[in-house]
Length: 181
Image: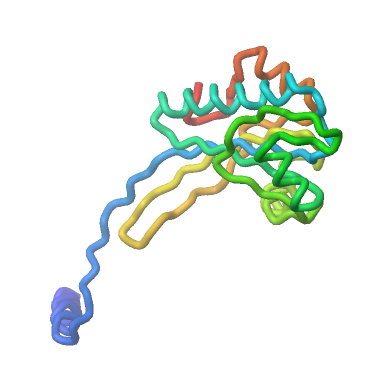
């Protein structure tokens, strides 16, 4: 077996093929907050400010814990109004909800939106409803072959504006989280 290894390395050097040395993976935690809604939902300006506070507070906690945090806005319905809703906070009633910036936005496709297909329908972890917050965590690692992702674990979900606001008022507890306590 030892001879085979040497021959393989020599053959690789002789043909000009790179010799790859495996590096140990560097694992880090990643938290994703999905806000799922639609332009015709939640016309209360204070609600938009509360979503911004949730994002800010979770982002600060994640930074303090040394994990990555990303906020993802998903608007069900038509793409144009959905983008305006997420980026400008403009509802179909022309109310402006100050959500603050998102790390990612996805709009359109109705309940067949590809992000919803991935995180709601395929995983079957949370009921389909809006507005909704879904908090997911996973382990990511960087290796010499690229980025790898562990399984997504739903650590919290809140359907309806009242449960979301209650969660904010209670300090955003995440008892199922491996990364934030």
